[in-house]
Picture 1 (spheres, helix red, strand yellow):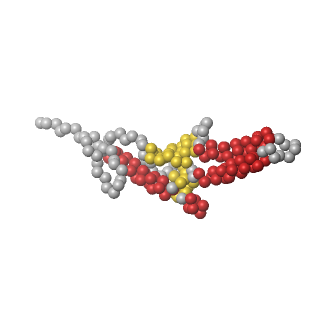
Picture 2 (tube, rainbow, N blue to C red; picture 1 turned 90 degrees about the vertical axis):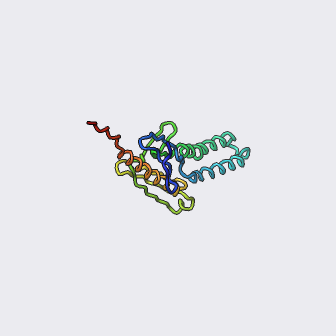
Picture 3 (cartoon, rainbow, N blue to C red; picture 1 turned 180 degrees about the vertical axis):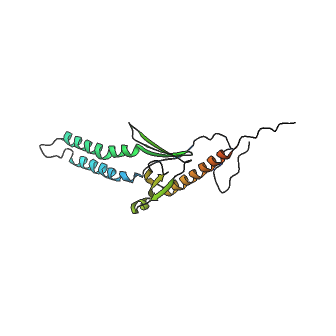
Length: 186
């Protein structure tokens, strides 16, 4: 069986009625610029700890300095990084998936076949970094908000293409009729 031809760089479409595997197109997290403050705190805590180690006033000891630096690092560096790392967005050929959390995960999905509107919002700082916020709303479920995602233009274009291809395939498969039964011979 030959592959259908495509025009203008569109993806190849499967034969009518053939099963289509779900393929991952992209997986990404929010923009990492929100970790800039954590990086500054890490550098400042390391510098302050190095400067004050064995140089503290009399009532304080080195273990107090190290434990205070450890608490600051856990609260202001490790926890924000873990929160950022545990929130991912995945675009497949069938749906958009949002996953958040490490120990108790929350998952939301939005199917391309149902169709949805895509709203792009970019603030001044987001434009400087090439990021933006996408809001996907299908009119039935709560809108899916992809906040501060990098390369927002590329992600927007990918989502538009996937909605179009999935709706074309769904319409084509809905229009497929089984072959007509043979006519009786007289």
